[in-house]
Image (cartoon, rainbow, N blue to C red; front, top):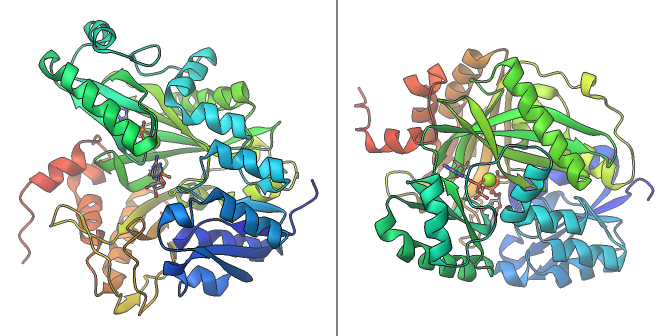
Length: 455
Ligand code: ADP
Ligand code: ADP
Ligand code: MG
């Protein structure tokens, strides 16, 4: 394939805008598909061409593979960028693109399929010599099997849906007393949520960090852009991400990168991807948990410390260009922190908080990047993810990145709705975060602690 001349963006919100901007800089024509609910959105205004493909409901628009491919064919684009969420990890969609002769900005359909099945992905990881969390070898079909695995891995254990994602499809089992009931419930939940009841069991690790490796491959050269530390989570969903991780030494960092690259080689990975690990704070060892075969929400953290534009690389690779970088060209400099700003009320159990943004004033100054689709007067539709933007701050070192993040959160004005920014300020300002010594339970513990008295 020759270099892409035009790209269809099958997404919305900040990531649609992010991709449109990359297209503009590369001289590629951008065609955006959008739902009726997004007609007034910034990406619609910014794209060279915007096409409404259906009503607000995602299955009728952003998840409607046929509608997206039809638009791609009608507008003669060279490739489709799926962003994250929606169709980005849908192997059938990637196969449909292939069948219709439209490029797909991502790996081959069969790679998406095998990595999208977390059980299969763990098998591949083991084959590639990558350590995985102790647990079942494959799917657990019935209670007796679960019991046998439980006697080996011990309690608490975690039942995970093979098709789970977005922090959903996981259940902690504290004791044998509830194993049978939990297994049945999580299987039927997985069936309803993901259309696949397959589940597996992992040891539930309690003092861990989430550390992931950003990879980029043109199909022959596989490079990594170092790690992101996404330990600040609530309900297995990321709230604050940073790079580099405050806990890794050079040897562990190299081990993680080598493991990620070995996995990519094993499956013939092409395009951008993220290999996710949990890191055991006590043992100081890491275990593979899953691979996301797409661009990730928190990719700007890696961009800020490497100076490399991942979306542009994705588009160039999809157009058939080989990577013009080598691993030695990837230099990590300074520290970056991202806050995912959600329209949710942290004081009201994170209830989604759609509505009209009366006034928006983004933070600015040295080292600040705000990736967002909101503007003053924007009405947040209630149908989609509650993330309204990402604030990414770079500093020469971690302390400066923290100070800058706190300053930028103070600058930020989003009037008219409640956001998670106040919680992110608490997280980043806490002694635990500042010390770098915390685990995935930290945010929940912070939330259950008495809020600080404001003077
Ligand atoms: P990231 O690390 O990029 O944040 P997430 O797993 O949080 O990865 O997913 C990114 C986006 O995709 C979020 O908007 C999330 O809600 C959505 N998402 C991911 N997997 C699923 C899934 N299986 N079902 C529904 N939404 C998903
Ligand atoms: P998703 O597809 O929803 O992103 P992951 O498998 O990546 O699911 O897990 C999401 C989060 O759940 C991890 O970042 C980690 O905090 C937690 N988690 C996953 N596996 C385990 C485990 N075996 N023990 C403890 N926590 C885990
Ligand atoms: Mg994950």
